[in-house]
Length: 271
Image (tube, rainbow, N blue to C red; front, top):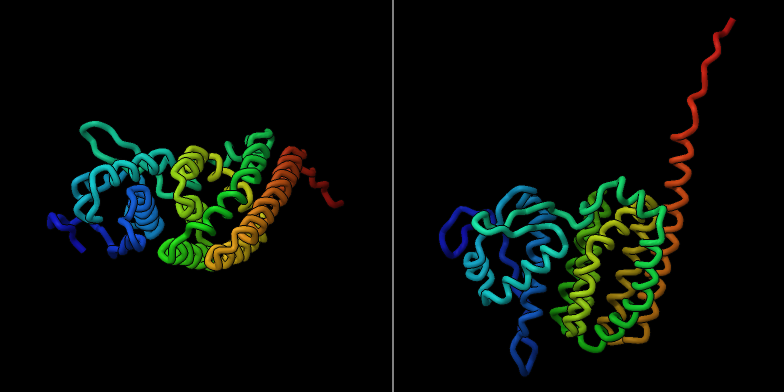
């Protein structure tokens, strides 16, 4: 499919942006969030690879039918997620196509030996239940629909043994966006690298991915019902489950390191 300018860029299917809330126009934060989710979907579908150049700002404005500010806010969010970088004279380059690949396995292993991820999850436990409660109060039908679509993508990736991290991060980001408070989004974007490494660490535990899928659906059900108390409670349980998976991942890493450090057993000649 070509864009309005008639170029041959591979845009893929155009996904409708959220409709304006009744009684008012769509705010710029919702537009930029929708653009971020769509670009991440392009990456997940393999439409762009690391090193590719994204469409120009003007092309994105034309494609999405939005203002320059909305596109710039979306690009800034993607830069903070470390999936793109922007340079004068060379456009917007794809650095990596999944936030989950921000940190290497060696870095994740190092983080498992420090308190960094423990502190991250402690922070999440303080923050995200409150975000879920507020999202239950403010989420629109379009917000709920977008979350459901992301969870469909998560489960499809899970069932085909593909990375689920982009969809996991997108779901939590959509919840933050549904609060109507832009600071929540900025906080999550600032933590995106650590969140990606945490997801990569807990992926070492196969049951963690399945457990998260169940939790996500329960959270979505509470959000859809406008039940802030239940949404907050389930989100707290979800983060605690992730903390448990993180501990299991740490034990698994230590066990593997101990096994790797063990000298090889010498084979004795059989007389």
